[in-house]
Length: 307
Image 1: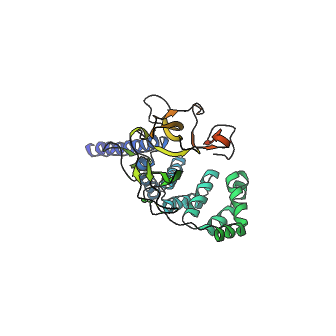
Image 2 (image 1 turned 90 degrees about the vertical axis):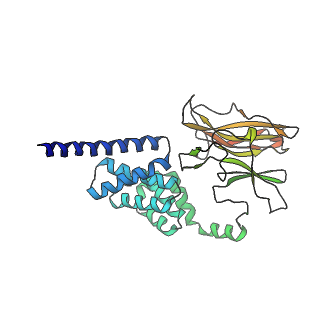
Image 3 (image 1 turned 45 degrees about the vertical axis):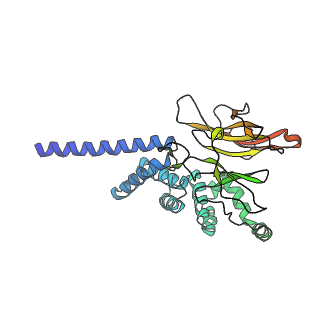
């Protein structure tokens, strides 16, 4: 009797632990903390495969494992998960879009094209896949561009996510995760890496720059900083930053800030009125005569480009 009770207790403990892990993984996933939950979804997926699970929760664990790997740029692992969903007839339209992009990210262009032919109904429902399918049919345009434009790797890259370059006079401002500019425990839960910061590479000639240096002081916040752009006279700056959705919340939205240069010093960035509560706004640039227009990306209704 005692052995039976011990067995029942252990069984309940194992089930409760698995449920707790699943719940914790879901909470991290909702907050887009992929670096914290990817191993949990992997473990739940592998356990489900061993046990022969086929319930909805099992397929959802595989789907979220795939998304975690995709957002962590582990495209091979993401493709393995999506292939498992495909094999069992569980691909959704959203799955198909991510699977297609993951395949192209690892150079499987032919395989990605064949994939679309297997799901004509989903292809017809997806504006993105429709656009990509038609574009890849016109291979002449791709070859023409590759013959006309040559792309070379810049020497300022650190291999730590350097992106969004913007000229300011002769210098180049860009965003990077190369350096930890905050306290010792300031890793971003998305990928367990540093937050993005502004860097400045001084121009030597048309194509050569110094190694980038971290920009601090008023240009450094407690979260992500960048991208940044400047007006034509170099006196105004538009900055994309994270803005908490509510006081004390860990959840954030992208927001556009404004800074002005006086006597060589940039002012404290100010939140602009063009931001709309509840929506992301960012990657803003000045445009037009006298910089009288600002173009920016946003997921608010009424935009162009399906951001």
